[in-house]
Image (tube, rainbow, N blue to C red; front, side, top):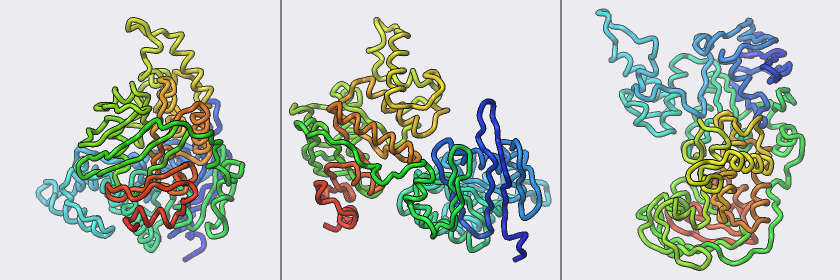
Length: 499
């Protein structure tokens, strides 16, 4: 391969300025053919800005982009696609009410010799492309009928159909099961073998060491360094990203545990889970771990009243308590920070102040009329306490980073003065620096006498944070382990049904 064509894309001294903000400052790196090039950094590091410039969403302020040695300047996503660039985003960008084939051929429908749409060719070619990446779905299926994982695979197939030379994956595993992640990695390996270049953006550093060849670290709009993946380690990358060592990131000051605040006895719900028994003490972090489909989220939704139990009892502070809906759970001091914070935990189109006070509205209103002074004071206090990064308490929540959105969800329950905090995947899609801030909030909650239940599919996180852990397998309670019994191999065996 001629040297001048070894790189698909070269980014040379790219800068991007928005009013009052320099998002990128003279960033340079290259993507080679057939390599997976990871880009990592905290929220605000400049990763998204680079991608948007490459895909023609933003125009660069200065610098140059070369594609296979020739200068390019993409004016729109369509322009970038025509040159062989494609992107698979966490928020999958497909026309949800159209079929798979119609998405593949959008804007370029094939015609028969009579001038009609050639559906036969559309379906055949779409099926062929999907099967090439081991996706077996009917090309006539409407996108809305597919699972999230299937939609993501369809988005990849569409890009391959467009003969992409470079594919950008932005947090592609955030909503996938472990099995689906394995399938995705097989597809990425296949793309490498076809000489397709890959840009891979993720907050999951363990994935970088599994699939990437090189990694570029970004911080505050500046490229810190590009390194070969096999010449670095997790702690070095984190230190480059956040400017500090995170070796002790899970260490939280633990108060002495008090009385039992929550007791679950013989809880059952159909096929989701059976005979669940555990207790949570004041000032404790109690972990729930299991593989996808183990029933862990279903358990906490049932405790919170979002799902109806089949049988069993729940005790709050020693008193048997009937919780049939979330309103009753809230009255009993419970808070749920859901995995899908955007759809289930926040009103994205509303401000921080509205989101913060929506559960505790009675605390900032009288006779149904909101007291603006009280709601402003409450929100300002919580923004300062949690160090939420925002220009204003009136900022729309959709404009915040993932970590700051999570802080708004927590603020909502602090405003309500909840006692038992249930965190379902508390750091999914959140960068390392923001994770540490969330963990500090855990410590603050414990110091106030609160109790925490934490669910995480990332074993080091749930082991690092928890005092005790319940391990689940296919709706069955396998064991409750004390901190002294934590061992990753032991936990994974239990989570796989091996006792």
